Length: 122
Length: 122
DNA sequence: TGGTTATATAACCATAAGGTGATTAATGGA
DNA sequence: TCCATTAATCACCTTATGGTTATATAACCA
Image 1 (cartoon, rainbow over the protein chains, first blue to last red):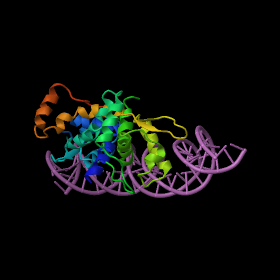
Image 2: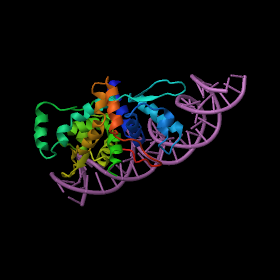
Image 3: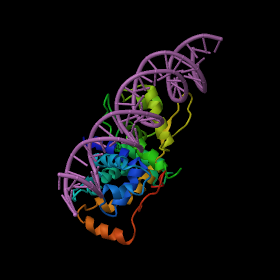
Image 4: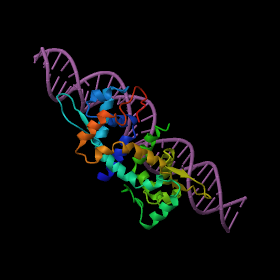
């Protein structure tokens, strides 16, 4: 479950509207209406996006009278970052790729290879 | 186009098969057959995944006889990392969230808010 | 009680995503 | 030239995504 959360997190981040929502929430809590305002899209659409973010663990929601303020919950971003970290060597100085390759071959890398049906990849 | 590449990159990373493929490629080039081997899925399916990775700029492909070796091209991961970086404060010491909030309010944060129809978010 | 505001849910639609099997194309070797 | 190998493409299917409108729910206010 925790592994597959990466799926949910990356999928959530793949949408520009959702990234923008996170960006907005970085400056503090906000209700659905407030979050919806900047977009040319209906409130239910925003609610759907929020549900995606919530299921990825990227936001949590409180209760303030009839409002349901959203707050950013960026810990899943840390997990995404952790995953990316493992490839840092590949983008830092993209020339000495050979170096890292050799290094890899000695102390096996990120995720050697998945298995069978429902993969257990990363 | 470059902005929307984040969409493609995150979307590509949202699939465990594709993450596993990248993990495999981290230890060196590989052909399609070789990449397909560990998975319970047909060669065309893998080819599709590779196309997704390629369109996100995450891999490139060469030619070696009838093989089309794939190599990891992790620079887009750097862009993803860059985006995540902006939220680092939120996951490092997830308690003093208030601190970063206040800090945010002074020097406006990542991405204040998007606009209109086809958003120009992040 | 009735009305207003904020949000969620339902039913629907179009398109994209992830598979499949069958076929085609490209290359190298007998 | 014929065959084997590697990979791409085609036609198709099922399910998920991202949006819509219309309706329901929840909480406050009068």
